[in-house]
Image 1 (cartoon, rainbow, N blue to C red):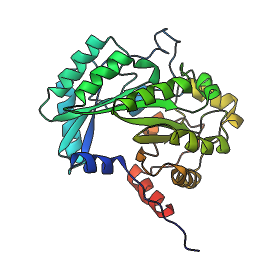
Image 2: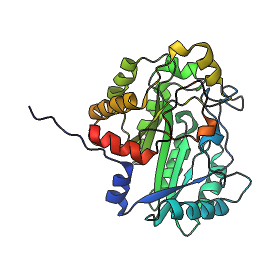
Image 3: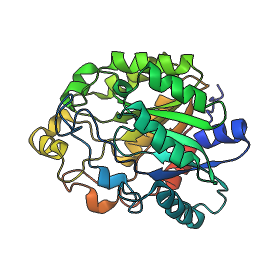
Length: 300
């Protein structure tokens, strides 16, 4: 029997089909926090999180948003020379976790930049409400607006263990409310969180299929130095499923085959500068994401 092949539908393909060209994300820092950091729902943040590990040096909240955008575009013109259009990516922490008037001020400032086509807003599902979604719906009529929800796991026991501070049921409500307004959204998940078996992770595909998301972003768990998760990993390593490079590629290839055919893949693996990675976890070495894409396409 001839083996069926599967296509890797990247989010870049979505941009090209809907907007006619690639839209390059430019990371900016709006100075937000999270409700599991400031005491609203807890302290310390997610146990795996160290923002510096994935945050560019030019994006700091003490700098004007237009300065951050200009510096980001300079950076991307070197790394992604084909990029011609840009969207501002509010990435750090929970970027709807502020009063609506403050959000309007920050988002409007970013959209005033002549080279910015729209916004990608990274946030948590418990940090949106009807008023905020209504405002983003209005913006989406003339600008590219994408909400990136950090869901991380479909299992409440895991979410509690990593100090996430919200439930999967809250994530479903937020995703469905966003979809009802026609706003493009991407859902973020991590594979390898403590307490989750390989079968539990594989079973998440069908749960994700039940969510009206446009795209997904998957990351393998990387243990970051100095985090609460590094301490937990040192004490209870047997609770973690650690993926080897080939093991993860095999897993994610099978996972993608289980996903709805209309879901785009924003990313399927993360890259953290080696200086941030804990020595307790076996390293994949210096493998860049584009190399992983080629390896995954071969498996698909």
